[in-house]
Length: 306
Image 1 (spheres, rainbow, N blue to C red):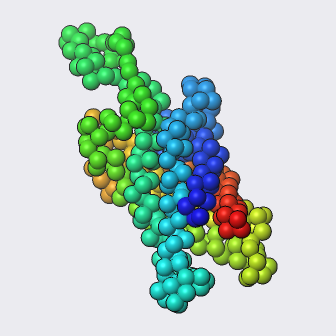
Image 2 (cartoon, one colour):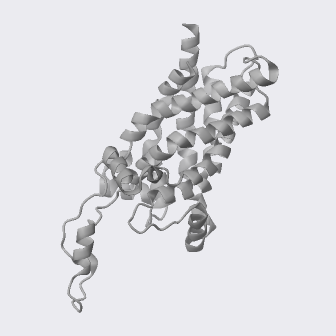
């Protein structure tokens, strides 16, 4: 039931994807002065469709991802309760919730890292890129002509035609580990992030539910789910590093690893770089998180009563 309910909670992807694109461009792109400038730039250059780039793959896989995350979290709580109290239905304490949520964060990276990588690569496809053979041609322009590279009139091509082409290209050039680029930064984001996500939700749900025996009211679930999205803001620094590493797709990679990415980003742009997209995370977090928890809990209640 938990797995099916998590599958239904996937409606939150459609709610949040346009702002997710803006967040990714702010974190891993360049030339954007602020959030509004980024939104207007995407709209002018790519129309409304630019905000939905890379959505098909997360939409197709989020059903599996959400069901695994919610299912794993619920079942881990039950196992901990059974092991500690001898009853799987015994309410979990704060420490139990912390362990269950951090383990869920760790498991989520196994599924989520390749999905996020493909999504970010497609979201970052803002302009055409030079094909390798055309790069060579551009470099072979006769010396002394002083023709700038951008004025060489040669056809450009997109790096990835779509999610399937993106996956196959990465697998061919870098193997399976290529799909897990940035997974270390994702662990830094999701292990504490899930603890800061599930625990506030459980606490707010308890506070907003009058009786311990009754099921939470849909309004309580919606509000608690939205308030739990504060974890998305606190996870922004690790999210910036993850986005930058996953977007780093060029032939000459800019970042050697997580620590190198942190140091290089700090040297180039200062400490404020790690808070890029925090405002977007805050705006996007509430509707996405509240939708996901509400759909999950309501569908879970429906399955348990039928």
